[in-house]
Length: 297
Image: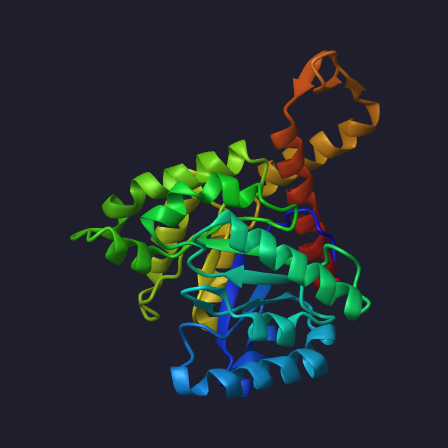
């Protein structure tokens, strides 16, 4: 798997307490599956879920056509190290990090994961980090967190916890507009991939799901976390690049071979400067489209 920031349209959660749900998740059309050890697991089931997820990864993850991520627990003193030790193994490509509160905890986790990758004979940097913004303090720290390690791929948003943290009331879209825009700008300034939208909890409200995904896309998000396989198709449709986007991305990428380095350090094609962020996005779209087309053949 590439360690460059990839584009996934959907990130489907599957509880670590439910092996059948995990199996259905990796068989779905989701671009990434998040095996969950956190919110969907009761405190008394944490240890059993950790073992079930570790076993599932060992027996099923290598054959998955989607990326396999794991959401680990976070306690008052940092991330659950036992979770991390259990799940960093071949077949896993990333950790979803809930409620990130400091740069130091991300750097410490980076060092631990590097040791675990080496012990498992995995290439260095295989495991990416997806920090989740769920509090006001987490939002304010997002820039330094994204830049703390090259493992960090993209930021994810947890709307319900964030709204509760800031004691907002009324329309969630209004309450979270500022932080969503903040996440887009910080991600762009940090040179990371576009942030990932929060889950939509009303499984039967397809119209609301699609409307929320379209709003997030219009703000500069790409992709959305989902909680049920039935939500995968509608969200995939929103974030699948259309013909114009595909043509734009392929044109940019095909031009790179003829690019020259301008004195500013930017790439120049036919007297036009190419912003590095646009080049990164074009490459990511091409990788996504290539992956989708390979699935169809």
